[in-house]
Length: 413
Ligand SMILES: [Zn+2]
Image (cartoon, rainbow, N blue to C red; front, top):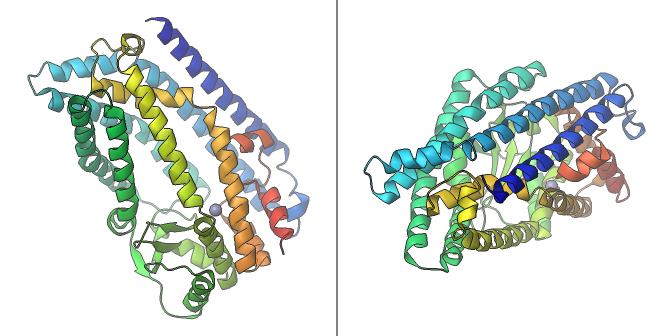
């Protein structure tokens, strides 16, 4: 323990208190508005659907509170409790090379954390989602997903980590600049490979059949001057009743993906409007802007780590006795979210700004009225609350709250 340990504990307490306070506000705001559908939705959403959304929101929020409390305790046990230190020493004493024992130590923590997070993810799927009629997954499917995800993290993440550790050891003081370049190239490669290599490990993608919907979509793509590598339907209903549509990939490997659940619940013109919104994110350069912003943030993080890695107090303050590059990377990844919580509302603000711009694009290239009716259906079917707490949504929501978003679209129609 040193001064940095105290600062770390205070930062954890502040970060947890803010999140807990916001969650309490959300909880009581949603319940307070549970018994009346807001005016803007009076003739569109039934009272029982509105009440279901309130209960679902509150129940998910409660689980979220427990998860963040648990996460806070776990982080303290891993660091100040000495678990990370013990694991690094354990592997170092086995007589392996430094590289192998470092990789094994990091892998042990990743596996440990994945296992500890599993019960809450299980509860979310088979208790909460089940209760509200969203869960379509089976226990076998759930564990299969977990195993594939862990295998992916290990087979892709470990070689990447090994490369970064090697660079840190070999290129001298400016290692963080090289490591940053490697990480950015790697994440670009991953987003390029995602639609054709990674996503198919979890879901089946079927090209959309010819017909009026496909014609309509191709018309929209032509109007917007957008080329893609195909329009696909994904078997989202294998796991959940929640519907969505998205763009994936980059460069010449872009795909348009509709969840089968979305196709079932929306009319053709509504699907067209939803897709026009997604196209808006590309056309308004949101994807590039987010990419640049995250590259800059990563560069700043690496530069800070380049400094911290030479400071003994950083390690000892977080319960690690022997300085090493691998321990520094791990500690930094685990601990930095505690110090950057103030970034959350800023990033959420920009995401919501992008959503408005994409809605503007959608209303220029499809019908705003269909965007509205499609959104209302999605809010209702996904049991998303129409009445979030203003502060909670300002802090956490990547999309504008329902009433504000619809009012904005109504101004465009
Ligand atoms: Zn959007």
